[in-house]
Length: 118
Image 1 (cartoon, one colour):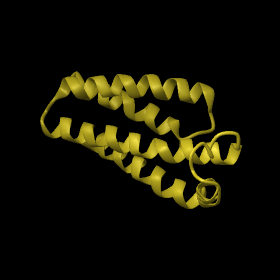
Image 2 (image 1 turned 90 degrees about the vertical axis):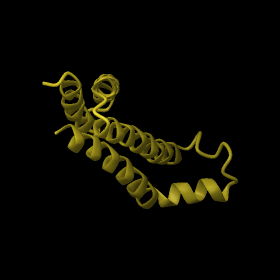
Image 3 (image 1 turned 60 degrees about the vertical axis):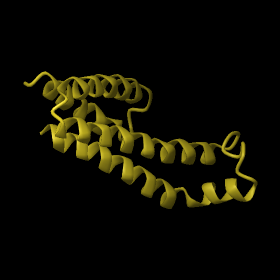
Image 4 (image 1 turned 45 degrees about the vertical axis):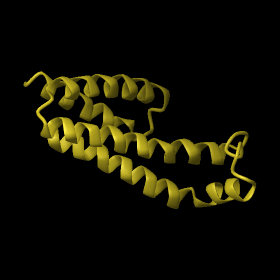
């Protein structure tokens, strides 16, 4: 279950990148056409595009670390990752209830429990 949760995190990261680049292609293109630097602020669509897409590499990174930790049986690291994700997803779900953060909120207890060998 622990390795599955880790792979789901990595897959979510990859999906965020892919979906962000496809779904938000126009705001991203517009920002780059306007020079790129500083062009994601002050425009709601561009800001959403940036944060949605940039969250992908972060999830991918955490998922990859969790995969490596699971393979190395580093249960302490899995436990810590679970708590960080629980805090992040908990705040995010309160801030934006209609979001995909519910998936992370469900994965976090799995990692916390796996880190405690439950």
